[in-house]
Image (cartoon, rainbow, N blue to C red; front, side):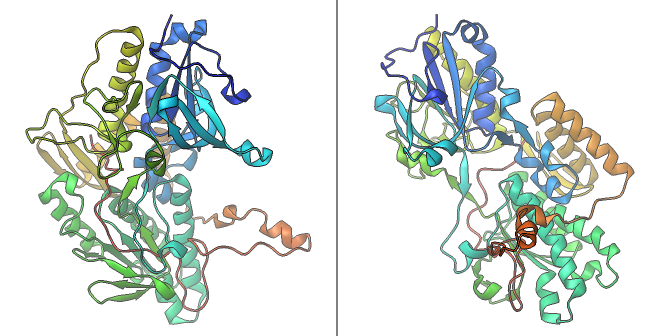
Amino acid sequence: MVKAADSPDSTPGPPPTARTGDTRVLVVGGGYVGMYTALHLQRMLKRELARGEAEILVITPEPYMTYQPFLPEAAAGSISPRHVVVPLRRVLDKCKILIGEVTAVDHAKRSATVTTLATAEEGAGAITVPYDELVIAPGSVSRTLPVPGLADFAIGFKTVEEAIGLRNHVIEQMDIASSTRDPAIRDAALTFVFVGGGYAGVEALGELEDMARYTARYYHNIKPEDLKWILVEATDRILPEVGEEMGRYAIRELRSRNIDVRLETRLDSCENRVAVLSDGSRFPARTVVWTAGVKPAPVLAATDLPLTGRGRLRCTATLAVADTEHAWAAGDAAAVPDITSDQPGAECAPNAQHAVRQTKVLAENIVSSLRGTPLKEYAHRYVGSVASLGLHRGVAHVYGRKLKGYPAWLMHRVYHLSRVPTFNRKARVLAEWTLAGLFKREIVSLGSLEHPRAEFEIAAGGRPEPKPPGPNTPGPGSGTGPGGGPAGEPPKGDPRGT
């Protein structure tokens, strides 16, 4: 029988959180760390779960895990959106899934405060979920700055909804530019500003520019050179994870496609839907995409667990929360010592490369803790990174070897195909890539999907709800689509390493 030391007694909560086992492992978050940890745990505790001696409860805002490295290809139409996400209920069939949000954790009482879709309907307030072992992996959120216009018009690039919305928006802007007689509106519609030179920004820009250039051949009055693409980066380099040499190559590659790469530059304002850069440049632009960094999820600040100065959980090399029993963390939320580094105090980078590998050690240590066996330390030496710059273009720095162009792009695809969860997803993605090589790209915008009731409301004699400013809202005058803000530090939560 599995027992958690010092497990507090608790009364059963509402039906979704009723206790059925002797030991409950609560997993907060259904992203990389949450899903993979729960997946490993349900395999390692298979017998205990079958006997009802253990229970794994995953609380997550969404019923799926998003494989973020494929978001740029989903935005470009190379992969269907449904193949970028992994349904948690199918993969974690031995776990309990509760769709909700953990708003606070009182680890001293071994309880989490949770809001669900039902709590708002019931009007009874948040529920309390007791647990014995805690895995806190809520991931990260976009780190924004107080920039005029940012909150009103910006669009990020962390979710599949944002990726598909951005694709629809880019094609919609080309429709606007093709039909308008106002040169100011046309120029603004065909100007796309991306803020942040990390993986998310560069890969999204590369894929969408590639798609838009291809789409332009179907417009009688738009040429590829009419589109203006601008990459704004606060530091003096892009893609720092692939090394300085490959970063310089990436800049040359992007500039050869008439992409304006501006280093050591910030976006100071997007008020009145005009992008104002720190170098004095001004660009009326309908599209500004924010990919300039991430920060820990807000729930970490609502716990009684120890945090670092940057708001991440202080952890040991065993992935246990420092000075705390029965609490574990990994990924973006955890500051884990890098015991392979020669530098004192070095921490593992909060990226996908470490996160996926940490989950196996994390699950093994939780099981070892329950069974009273020794824990192991997490150790993985960073081996390099790969990045796509669009179709058949890429850069890579792996095991000291530097690749560029087609070989790097192919390595990027092979690596991420091997890492996307489940054989089902692997087969579907491979099939889509194969078909994409045989047939032409799809160039359809389905922006109306974001407001499915609008047409019916008009037909029924009502007034459709006004669209909020965003990626698919043209806006008045010379308007712009989503706005952006100044480039901050390079993104830290989504580097795609190998």
